[in-house]
Image (cartoon, rainbow, N blue to C red; front, side, top):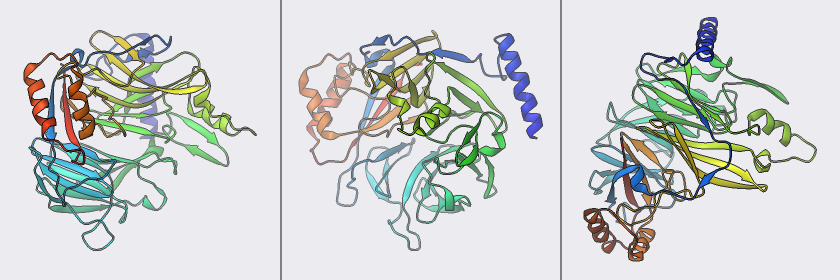
Amino acid sequence: MKNYLLHSIAIYLFGFACSCQNNTGDQSCIDVINLSGWKFTDTENLSSIADSIEYVKLETSDNSLMGDGCFAYLSDKRIFISGGGRVLMFDRQGNFIKDLFNVGQGPGEGFARCCVLDHKNERFLMYNNFKNAIEVYDFDGNHIRTIRDHSASVVHTQSISVFKNFVILDNGNLIPDFFSAYHLDRNYLHLDSTDYSYLNTYSVKPKKVIRMFDAHCVGFQNMDSTFLIKEMFCDTLFSTHDFQVFLPEYIFQMGSKKADYETNIKMRSLEVPIDPHFEDGRYRIWSFLEVNNFLFLKVWTSREHNMERHLCLYDSSSKTVKIYNSEVFINNIDGGIDFNPFGFRIENHQVYQDKIYTLADPTELKEAVPKNRAYSSIQQRKKLEELTESLLDDDNPVLMIVKIKK
């Protein structure tokens, strides 16, 4: 199988070098995105990428009160909120239903390290740190099954995703295999990244590590028919249909100084270690989101030996790329809080269909309204004003849902 995959990739790369042909039946040519030049744009209006904004006020009570650092998971029927190991379930209008479980190590208890929605099968999946297992619930909050994680003794699971019949775990950077995929139908470990080590091999003292990329930080996104995956130091965003072949979807270019994995290891291993991220001209793409024709990137750059975070937007329809000094789009739709597609305080963003959603602080929402900023939708402005008049400073966060233009 491995020789066959090597042969397939070689044929594919040869074809790409010779001409710009589709790499699968439904994929267009690879987009090469040039991020070099440091030509920053100050900011951009939200209306240039979005059609509308929806807010969902999540019920605040003694039982549903959330802490800091929560994450939201949105479906047509339910809203799940995770934080502090808990998972709270709300209906689509924000009414609290129940806790999925009690936090603890006893029977039926757990601790949610990371979570994901399986929209196709109407399932909520969470990684239970206390049991080193994937717990599966239906959208009514009933526990369906447990999938044991056999690699958990040496893994610090960072994130979880789902694609077709597979659950994908980001295993962190503690072991050579940066992700694992479990087959939902059969309860077994389907693969690990050592099966695809032909893409990159690094020699790291004191041990040799062979992997697809360095597992420093890996990003996933389920696109229904394809699954996108990118490691932070890798200059390529890959797609796969079956976890058998990974094909380049986007290739990023940013001059000659790229914060790749080999440079990172070399500079940190010096007698006086140097953090390569602070050398001028280096970069790393921390996170990505693809919605409709837009690819959103969180780019960390270095200027004058200081790390800076920037928002980058690539429009695949016009093949244009912009890098902004700001991390937010100016909210000129309803004049409310500006929108950061990667979340506000933490990266608590998610994508569902053509929507990006995140949790917004009620106090910040209230403070944004009196500033009399420009807005394009009177109807949405009135809804925002009604919402903020009902908010208290100690209320739960508000779910902010932005519909992206086609």
